[in-house]
Length: 299
Length: 324
Picture 1 (spheres, rainbow over the protein chains, first blue to last red):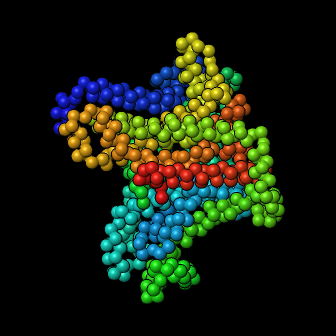
Picture 2 (cartoon, rainbow over the protein chains, first blue to last red; picture 1 turned 135 degrees about the vertical axis):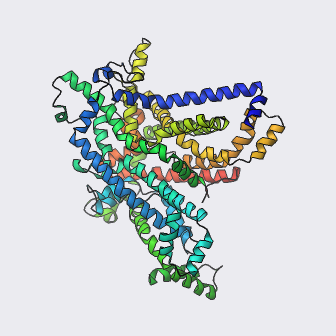
């Protein structure tokens, strides 16, 4: 089929196709180069990085940047905190999302129109930053771990995705049959719906995990104590505000060497912070794409 | 549970269409039989009320003079005072201009970019190449805002960045890109395209794969070129999805993401980088000027809502796709 197509390609089509391939190759290059550059720099020596010798591959291979990271208690605490927020955050996120989405998907649930409206309104209008902050403050959640978990406990978009999935892939007859057999709604959800919904659960876990791992806004406005900071806030302090605890540079006694290590550290830090999310991506891309597509169906 | 079910039953009774008492009793029975569904939904509703609706109610702080001791509802009314102060402040036009420049620029570049990528990918016959491009362009989506901004700063830094090394290699002077106000919106918009193009293309690729194959067959019989097929089949095929996304985007036009802009700001570029959301944060949370900044925020939300409703109305009249 494709063979005959290829033969019949007219001259104009050939030019068009060439342009398409050139465009895509350019996009590919532009996207991949910065990523490679960061990765290569992070494995180079501080001198090579500052003098701009790194173009594509690591120069003077060294692990100095990574060594500095893993000996820094601040970064390690941040890493631990981010893991904590991600694991428990996702647990809360997915539970609440299913608890909301499942009833919304059932036609036997009266008031689902109203509830759906209640949900969608929050997507279009919000009270704004100040009332949001004051609400969290009044609940005495400021500067606690809860501030990273509760205010972002459920996302409207994910509820809609889950609801669409439940509605379209759990046959109605199954629910009716279970009801006749005396199975309760909770029993049906636990024993039938959830086992059938593994793909969507995977999507939810992934989407929430990425957003929890990358979240910094809540931490920025709600947290004050260093020991509660997630990795992203530590990254901001080091990468963007350029403030770094000099105690971690004990072994570097020269000013220039310290500056070099400080620059190199930024590259290694970017790699260390991004790898956990990026590493799982190739294995789960299928689910992710599926999730976006379910979300794009009008529910 | 009886109180909830009773309430719902009463609510349904008011609707004149389904008013018969027999149906009503039937409905009450069904609600009772499915009480577990209402139990499930309690916690999510509590979340919505506490973290979404109470703040919405709290938006009235914009019309009051907030006193921390007396709380939001106990503070004195101030009428439109904070709004007039904002409209008359010298910052007003700067904020509006910066916000609009960045968001309209984003819309013009950022909206068509994923469409272009999806259309191009759709022409590719080699599945391996297609999958590679898709996979690589999707990857930056996982990079956090902080890392993204760090990368921008590193790459554009006049000392370390490869952009600088490139300039030097061609014998040009180093440029401190992040410190030049004029470049801010371009850096913001194009880095967004870099990060979001692959993610954005997924929806359009899905729409493209849903197009009826017969259309292409018919076009081939008619001797249509590839470009013509794109123009007459592909583009109409993704129009519904594009319309919905356009509506959503326009509805967010005054909501340029706080997170990224705030991180990209530095003292040298604030004349073009200060937007409404960053201003609200600085004045409100850092400056503890709660009522005034809430007024600025509310003004922004209302404009967004009006835009969203307006665009949706227009889309419904012009085409068949709309949000509601």
